[in-house]
Image 1: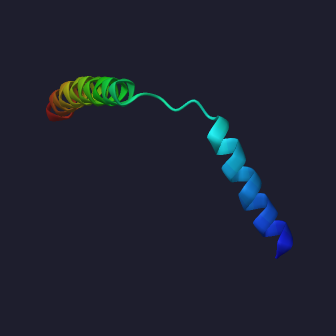
Image 2: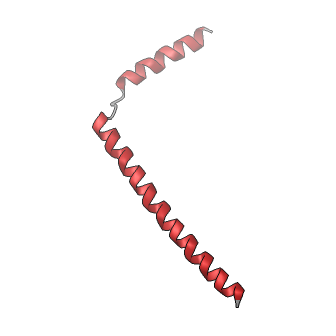
Image 3: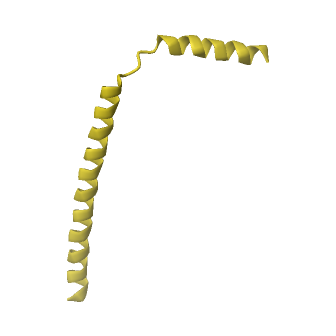
Amino acid sequence: MKKYIQFIKEVYEELKKVTWPSTDLVKTATATVLIFTLIIAVYLWGLDLLFAKIITFILER
């Protein structure tokens, strides 16, 4: 049990040394990821529709 307590203390000390990002940076990064994800999702949705129409056209011939 003593090893686990020592480990937790060491982790706590190491976390004090971490340079945490600012709130503004986190908000900006989150917004960027969400926007990029939305763009990729719309792009893939469009490709899916296009390929579905092509396959339907080929199979109905």
